[in-house]
Length: 273
Image (tube, rainbow, N blue to C red):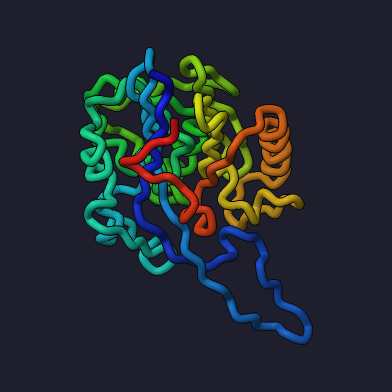
């Protein structure tokens, strides 16, 4: 049996398109107050069944209580629409899984919509060795502890800091996770953003970009930076790195929040093989 990849869909956010496509409608002399455009942004996590490494989970999604106003600052800006069966635990249950079944837990980065349910893994095998880029953890801890604000720049301190039974393994740069599964560091969106490369027997190589690239309109060419950005210079370099990998490996890219791509995806409980 080869590697199997499950794409879990967790509803969508509704927000200003400018967060995804930076300066989407700039003001001009003749139109100083352009009408802003809203968009929907689907939310995903991923599960991999690996013949030797077991179950590999990639990201934990938006916290289950965020739709109930757990982060007041996000209620008006990023409202989340999610059905009961699309919540993280329900998606795992549809695969016959629970957090305790994970052999490895990998996080693309620590923004609240990607690390939100980390507490569910407290005390589990995977929860004692959560894999994240060193730069990401250092940055997230710094920005959420340098002031009294616990929610800063899409990081929510309660999602990842001070949780009993959660420990991190920090990595620096590209890292092989298991045969046919590799993390690649793609900074720019955040200092430690990373994607996951999965080599499948039938589908070929798939790259899960997470937020390193939101959607195809960012990827281009030409590359168009998003509005949420830690470093434009690093983001552009990461897109170049990703494009070279796509060409060299003949890879299929699954973007982090692409509404246009959603209808073409094979969603769990079906799998990519």
